[in-house]
Each structure stands twice: as C-alpha cells, then as structure tokens.
Image (tube, rainbow, N blue to C red; front, side):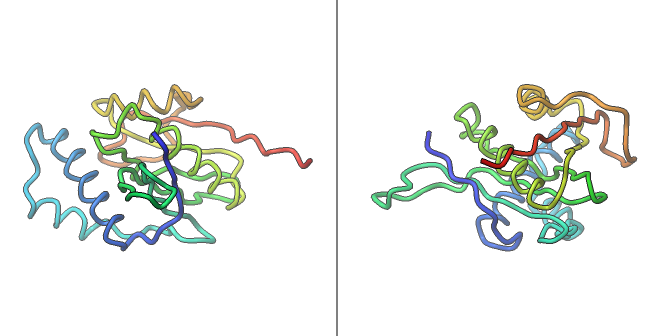
Length: 171
C-alpha cells in the first residue's frame, strides 16, 4: 500500500476523526466495552495539542491510496511527537486504523515521527503505553524500541519504551 505521512494541524477534520477513533479504541479496551460518543467527546475535551506544533512538537496524519491524483487517498493514521527536554522527544497518540493495520502504515508513521523528532533536535524517543495495546507494542519493538524504566507517571502508563535516534550523516 502506498503511504504518505505529513505534518498536519491537530484540528483538521481528518486529524479530529482519527483522534476520535484512537480515543474510542483505547478507552473501549480499557473499559472493556465500547466508548460512547459522549465519552469520546469528554475525553477529547481534555486532549489539548500539548505542544504538538514546532518548535516543541509536531502532529502528523498518514494517508494511503493513490497519491498520483487519479483517485483519493484515505487518512488512516496519526501521531504526535513532543519534546520533553532538548534531547528527548515523546511519541503520543500513535494510531493506525484497524482496517489499515499490517499494510505498512505503522512503519511509515513511525518513520515520519522519528524524522520530526530529529528536526526538533531529539536524539532519543520515548513513549509509554498500556499492556493491552499489543498491536502498538509489537510495532514499537519491531522498529527498534526497547523497554526502558518508567520516565514519568500517569494513570495509563504500564510499560515504557525508548529508542536512540541515528542522525543521518551528511553526504
């Protein structure tokens, strides 16, 4: 599948739709029942951009499909990266729609987020997630993330991952 991942405002219709889907999925898994629209609305009301714009971060949306202009593309992934300190960036709100999983979208999304982190000056990426989000955990490990000690606290962090970023050498 042909994927394109680019920076996009946290508030575009596609970004909002993907963030709603992300929240509905992670909340539904946590509660072990589908999240209602009202619960998603409430959760997103407390979901500010958290410095997901340069120079402190970036939010991206991934699309797949015809990129040559003959047909449309479908927005099916999103994620953010925010600087925690001058050398460390954190991944957040990483999501690939279930219908697009196992199509290369997760790899394209992580590559774009790593590039964004490098542009922001990061040398290391970290993230926290929950144990029940097995698809995400598998994606992170497959792409070089390793379990690290907890670097923060929060109600949903159950496992933490980190990855050192390589800086491309100048030609």
